[in-house]
Image 1: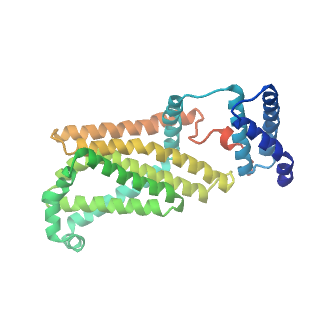
Image 2: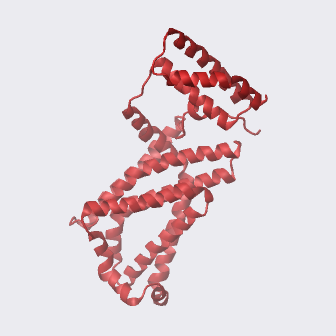
Image 3: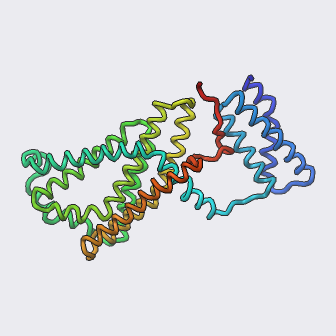
Length: 331
């Protein structure tokens, strides 16, 4: 089928249907015309999907048919139902599908942290080259803990949230490069390891864990998830599988946006814990328990609920009516 000729012949019908769907009111003749055009454009969409799966054309016709259907039925889905679908179905499924690249990202972070911590903790000369001895002593005896008591707690939480959200956004935008998420993970892992090594060298390793674990479990996991989801778009670009490369990348990118939006409240919770729980007067064990509970809840949401949603056929992508997920694949 000649796509250009097909578009040229049927464009007036599509434009007219779009005009009718946007009209504030319709008389009896307009309603009849809307119904007829809806059926015709639905047929056009089916034809395009089965013969020439052009992404842009399918996207336009799918959205047009979807709007016409809503205008005909008069259905309006409440906002709370959209929110429930997003947080109970789309987001956990998207998180679950990214589990392997998230595991890869976590291994990069943990390995770099461990190597950095051991290296700087055991080698005083290497530590001195990076952080002068006076600064090491100040970090171990005062600065590391003092950081969590800077300013008002609410302002501190907002600053932490903004910083972590910026890191997550970088993973989203630059994830397709495959380089930036890995660089970010290595940089953060090396910094965490350096701090642990310095405090460990001065006998403050217990202080390090007491002040990093309550919020760090959830916060670092969220950053790792963002990096892993970003790497998934890179992998979809490199190895698209049976789908056309652009389609595979588009699907992964839309799921990545779902993950990015979902990480906003997760990072907000982590920022709240860092501002109000980490520096609190609660016993250290209780502070760590609060952070561990939030962390385990997120893991259960990602892996348990995510697996259920994924098995139910939920992809975390937009609906087929909006993007047209049926495309020709290679044998």
